[in-house]
Amino acid sequence: METKNKLIIRALNGEKLSTPPVWMMRQAGRYLPEYKATRSLAGDFLSLCYNPELATEVTLQPIRKYGFDAAILFADILLIPQALGAKLWFVTGEGPRLSTITDQNDFDLLGDIENIDQVLSPIYETVRKLSSVLPDETTLIGFAGAPWTVATYMIAGRGTPNQKPALDLIKTNPEVFDLLINKITHATVHYLSKQIDAGAEVVKIFDSWAGSLKGELFERYCIEPSKIISDELRKIHPNIKIIGFPRGATNNGYLNYAQSTAVDCVAIDSSVDTQWAANELQKVTCVQGNLDQKLLVSGGQTLINETKRIVKALSNGPHIFNLGHGITPDADPSNVTKMIEAIRN
Ligand code: CP3
Image (cartoon, rainbow, N blue to C red; front, side, top):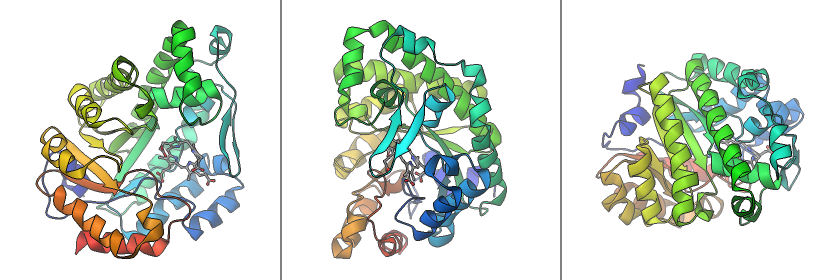
């Protein structure tokens, strides 16, 4: 099928569809027994990310099982820091650890953007493989972390509840902070552009920690870098579709982001009032979201009612059904089937 006729792309082009297309953040993941099996074949999570054959397999698993309208490349937002020379490892049950960047000296140790493909080329190979084997109607989504979110991990060396180490660096060493944001921004343009060359039809920019940036900082470190990335990508790939996810932005933050970055779609978290999104945000852009991912754990009639409420609330404009954040490892796979039935029937 031509890209422009795929349901996700039609929604991204602003079309209102009678049934919204659907996919889920973290749809390839630990709630699926088949994912866990393939991951143990690979050895560990990072080996899985850099193994094109197995990464293709885990990307396809949720497509085979549920028939989602989009497949998202299996990789991680922390591969860019690793490709820039940061040390990266995952501690089971805890999450990522990285070497930290706290001063000019640490920054100077990072490698050149021109060299990131030495590490990232297996990821482009996965995209190429996916692009040749995906079902005809399925859209292929590539992704990267937004510069602020990636920087929070690079500065602290791990996930942090309130992003304090990164917020502190803005105050104590703004020069180094700006150098880091710029470097990640331009590495991300390169990385996403290569994913598009390899066959990604849409790219998503994950700003998972956008909510910790307030006021002017939100403009400067969430909106501005995402705008640079989308402007630069469109210079190289004029038809590329871009989804932005400034998670945790307040209503006005989401609206400002949509207007200022001119991405094709804004993904919203579950705390956003869906009716507000229908009245305000959907006038400006396609909206993606925003079922509470916890409902895929608890299931029952609430899952069905909430799914239907969101479909209805956003039915007067372009909508891609998704969760407010990634599906969690304790979700029941059969609840995903029930959610999809509630959307499509
Ligand atoms: O969505 C998908 O299915 C595609 C693959 C994908 C992963 N991570 C795989 C993954 C995507 C799009 C991401 C994005 C990502 N990674 C984000 C942004 C989105 C979000 O969730 O806010 C962030 C912040 C990361 C960084 C990251 N990766 C963390 C903090 C963790 C540890 C927490 C956790 O869930 O375990 C990861 C690990 C990770 N990334 C896993 C997967 C499937 C689990 C690893 C495992 O198999 O043990």
